[in-house]
Image (cartoon, rainbow, N blue to C red; front, side, top):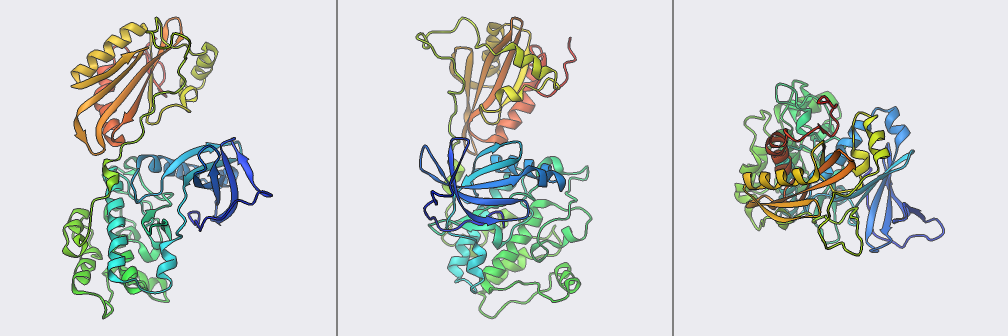
Length: 444
């Protein structure tokens, strides 16, 4: 498996390698079809990490590049205590490097392979699983391959969901509002996925959670048969039996999870209200964690850096013109800067743009936290899912009559930021926009 991670051991200095001058890469932890996972260490902080190395040529040959891009997008959207954290993505011409949180407790599958778990232990893992899945679903993300092999344990025996390679984003929905790609591991896949008629990814995930809970408590799968078609028939009918040691409340919950009709299957909210689930459950602190504020990228500092700049920061015009020749996409100039960024170009002066941004903040009922050096930081007044939404806009001059404006989320919820960007920021700024990033310039 690509997600295999083991107990920490010192890096073998004779075989170590340094990548990008930032990470020391050591022994192999595990490997899958297209990737190998190595133990690594951040050279600056000495933090242990896991480094997933993907061969670009193999991925392209198998037409898997979109899946890799989707995995990156998903892992950047989901920040939760029970989800593996993606720290950084780097690439060379031949390889892609995922630098991820290092989890040394191994797969949950290894525990289950030894036999059934005690009910309290199974409950704890199931609570953490549902909490993380709920968080993913609130972002419009369905995992689609939930199974014990993709659930890791940290040193404190806390569960971490990994391997988002088969996950789905909202843009993958067809006109009927459903997903149609048949994927996942057969023993854990919902019946509606097997029927190939379209399915709700979130409801399919709930079925998989039901199978996982059964496995944790039983030590074996609910739908088993040497003949695969017979196994599918059992799945289609949700035909299974409970071992005698299952408690009455556990059987009640599983009976609501493993329901063949997805419309009658219990929801995440229903699970969280269930007496068996609620026992000892506390909401993870991850719901209130804010992503770090990132403001000090590429700033031009001099002896008078505290004084107000008379003009916006300047970008090399040659780079700008080169970017125009490749579909007017400016992302290459800004790819190492803030996360969740959005760019547009304008023929207006920096001062005109700044005035427009400040008036927009007031119109949106956002508080202006900072406005200087051609940078505006605005903060919402209402509490979101991850605290107050904070947005930064910065103006850069790329030519005498051309400026680039970059928006980015400084703090708060990514999903809420994207909604604000699409529904409020873009429409309100159309009178000063020449072209948005990635769009052809049609306003000449």
